[in-house]
Image: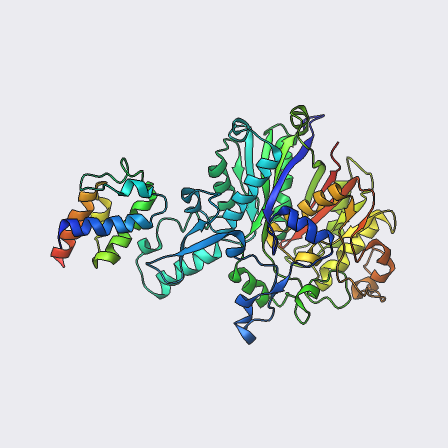
Length: 449
Length: 86
């Protein structure tokens, strides 16, 4: 049960962002309409065996990390070195690269929040962080060496499990900061990042925790990239910076990207009492499932129910809708029409951050939540980059007898989708993310006061 | 192979275990305890054993690893015994 009058504030944020040195760099690049997507040499060396070769990836060097290769196993990363000594070797020993990003993001978020050790290490502080994929790079080489090369299991060493387990990011962060409250991961494919934040919001709203470090991570992994490339769902045929093009007529898939978004949440009254800077207030979180038995195809009805749930307790129209907007042909059209069906054709704008950095999968929801916080802070709307041409014709599904949504083509909603960042008063933002399995998540946040 | 030669090799291995403070490796003797003296995380012991197998060209029995003590002399004894068996 929600505790009446109990509110949840965002008081810190951090993470790992492609091509960016830090959050300030990320902020500057986003609001100057830059793309963070590059050609990926790790993919392109496979030539015709791989379809897509663009990504918003992050290298170890860019995060000031160094891989220590195993002397026992071929290509196995034994551990990492933090060249800036931000994280101690004992914590690095149990982490894959995504967990290291989660720890760095958590450290930045806690520093911004201004929590004392006694607060961070409290029973009332939880950690809820998830990832879309497994610790692929660890598992791949561990398994290859055992199954194909015939080595004994002990040559894999004692850290294949902790560096690859489902909740490795949350576990590593909790061990680093020594929190004593809830430590869990929520997994909901590409809604994971927002799902973890939503769950963390509920932990505080329901009076179970006072503070939570929350978010999502997707460590750079060619293995992850290959899985989606095999599905033929990745963008191809454009220059890197033009590859992610949500809502554009010529979009042909998403850009598989990587990153981490970690935030610090705190019960609003306690944050205010200690004079914390309030980056935003979470108004509500709602999630549901399509219920149509389809693993992949988006559901207009599911998204209609999502909006209804989100607006149940607070039906103020958001100033910005931060969409999932992946740049896939079916997903974008259904999503835009469900937004318009709910909010109409005016008095708000649509922002698609994936147009700038691609689809960070398990990190998408949390990194995009951070972009929403930055929009609140800057009072600027982030663009739908590359949405150059919108379909002037009806989508095929709009022509069917069963279609219950808007009867206008996507081009009718041009005014909602800026192609460049611009300033306007922003008091409320709705964030949307969806995932395989027909899972839908929505959160609304307001400007902190 | 002399016992001191084995100890020197073990110290080299321990130097690659980043969770062990290198300062503690300056005066390693047969009586040095991995756990109480070097603060080696218990999870690292199997990694050290596997690296010792590689360095000294031996393959330990699983039972011997299960019974391995936590002092330097225990693993020196095991390396010598395993070499003699092979």
